[in-house]
Length: 234
Image (cartoon, rainbow, N blue to C red; front, side, top):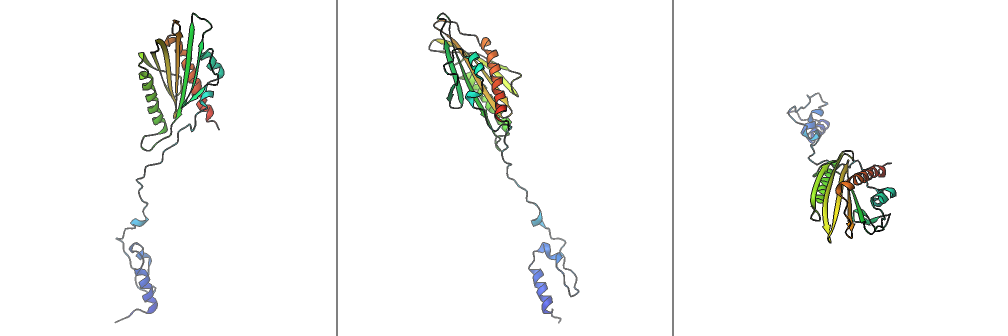
């Protein structure tokens, strides 16, 4: 019986220790044929299929402007004559301006503006940044049509402000004073602007109609949308 020489035996043992998919690369230098295994499947070398969800994607806008500086001083004075504080009052998530023009005792007029801006990012489970922003904008529209027990609610799609906009008009009553309200909700990419403009007549003065407030509210919302882009310029 032929016994393998020591060097040949060492090579054979080395081949036996290599995984089966690599055996075809081992040879017998003493003239024997190459051992091959064509049926072996090199599955370990195939790229693994990832089932991981792709990471959330950032939206076009990474930040929002200083809310109390998103409207110019001229715009604030136009919206709120006799404004109490031109710099505005920074609240949680919004800036608020208000003022009462009481010089004409027979026509005392109150006005207020509340500006809210939110930028959203994408989420693997909830959609892209723009999609999430649209959902948020829809929620702001719903809020405008339901808060403070409103009456005379009207909703209208509005062109020319961001990528999407809706104007909501309502009337509400607080302490026997009737308020006219206009809320403009606009989406620009992944950012949402919600501007509420309200007016009322005090001491028996007539309150402004929503129609009288709408033009100024929409112009201010358009300015706020532009401030988002300006805040994100590099």
